[in-house]
Image (cartoon, rainbow, N blue to C red; front, side, top):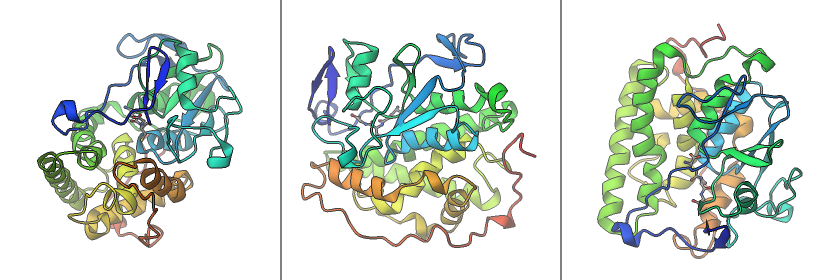
Length: 334
Ligand SMILES: N[C@@H](CCC(=O)N[C@@H](CS)C(=O)NCC(=O)O)C(=O)O
């Protein structure tokens, strides 16, 4: 694991020491947008036109951020239009790799061995962390965007003319509620598990542990009276929570020491997790072998033996009770 400095790869673990034991996530740097016509993005970002076959997603099947993009690609019917390559689950000295012998799909597009090479193809002097997901433009041979929250939004709308999909995971009238839930879930759950797990000071770990479970308690209550996070419609807020929940009992509970409870111990969250896991298409995007091998094998500061636990048994295919609440599916699909 490491990062690029002036285009040179350096094998370095996160620097928590200069932040008092805190893991501080770096903001994504590549922020262009795909739009239907190539018009600028919502905040004036450089726009690139949606075209069949032009863009390619580089993901890790282990990564919760990349997983958001994979789910959106699936649910929006983009599989024939946007290709995918996945890394090996093992993120070692050279970071994410496309070594087929280590479980990657390989990179049939650019034939790189390591994900950082895609960043230096984009900018030979790139400085920063080298993360998945990355959305690649085959025409300009560069990464368009490496922020999953934005990739999800682009996939939600940019290709609709080409696919005919009318599903809307970020409807106008629900944006305020989605944005508010996302902010809470991002800080305390999606990133919260990392802040607890990568902390190198006891007090820092305990602070993030408490904030994580306070947020899970809030979500548990919220989901008692409504089917999805924004109400009766499944939205991107649910997809963003799902990718952390589905990894929780298998990885975050043990590896990141987020062990006040398992998700299986929260009646509403566990039923909600099962409903989403069973949602047509979603189960196919979940790979527990990659998930478990990645975390337990790639973080030697946390798990130096690299032993990957065998359990737990997960019952994600068991029936759920969410039909007791009104659910209307995804907006646009009615
Ligand atoms: N803000 C980014 C974060 C992505 C991210 O941190 N991905 C992790 C994998 S789960 C990664 O590639 N980490 C490598 C590193 O930090 O060096 C996003 O949501 O797209």
